[in-house]
Image (cartoon, rainbow, N blue to C red; front, side, top):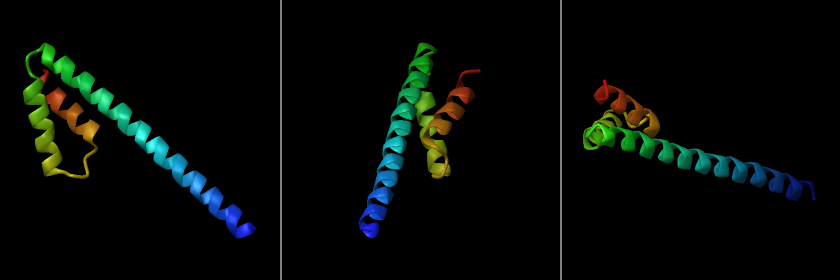
Length: 77
């Protein structure tokens, strides 16, 4: 019984962590889209997107949202 309960607790926390990670990723994607929409208002959506993609290629460990923020800041001066 202890083994079963322990496994259920571990599974619960793993599922909770997974769900929180999925929610963060969704929020990040929404933030990225907002940045791109703002860049589009300046006619620079493609440039910002391409710059972010290049940053991600150069540093695969860079968080996706951070790459888009850096690209936005580079192009929208």
